[in-house]
Image (cartoon, rainbow, N blue to C red; front, side):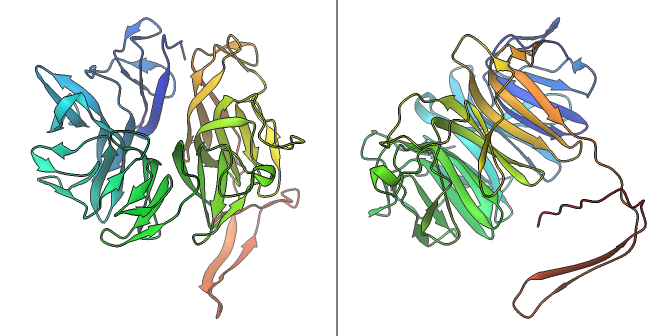
Length: 374
């Protein structure tokens, strides 16, 4: 729907629009300073923000964003859309800001590189209840940075999963990732260097992606860039990736992971999956989905987003064509979902806590395949 003139970094569906933010100033002929929205057909004029939004979140039917937003001589770490304009809140010192946000314990949880917000001391992780800020009783440090950098927060199963440039939590080794119920913490160490950039809940497992060449495995058995766990013991995902992943998303029954191709191999002989800058994991093997996304040899996927309402997956990053069509920095892939008419459907929990589904399909017999994801 017209080109963007700079790289987007995040996306969300809200109020009938696809909202995109990043380092750009135009969408087609429209001025779009750091923020744009698309109604499915055209780009729509949108009031600008003062800096790119790093992550979106919808809470209580309101769109929120995390970032570092200069307003006059102050910098704010959060922004919300009031239906007509942007409202900034959460003053942060030193020009730092937040990089990630999610809903946890019915509050907004922000993470980034901040040691206070609105004068409330925090340790790079803070909650907002719509009126006041509060801190977590956690001490987060990073041995290779002056200040740790929280890059991703995700709520899964009543826990807050936290990833980034993190070495220790409450004085104990956390190695890039940990989880908390808000008070106590569980260490989930991957590797004592680099960072976790995204966390995805897929097929009853937690997948972590980022820049960690070896993971918690010996070098000749490494699963670089991606690992998974069902408890706190990490497992390999194939043989890992010849890619430095930035982002992941579930789409239909598969997991998509995007980033930047890494020509360095950490195994001898090299057996990491080469999926370019965009790979698909079907639960047992990888396939290359990057064909068609081209730039100048430095193709990067910054963010993957699945719009479940339209059955569409979006790729945002550094590329200029998608299978030969102009697609400056943003492209999409969608499927047609055939409607199924059910005359009966039930669900119950078995003795061993498995979900048992039963249904009767009244649609034509040539609908031979039904896939479900719990």
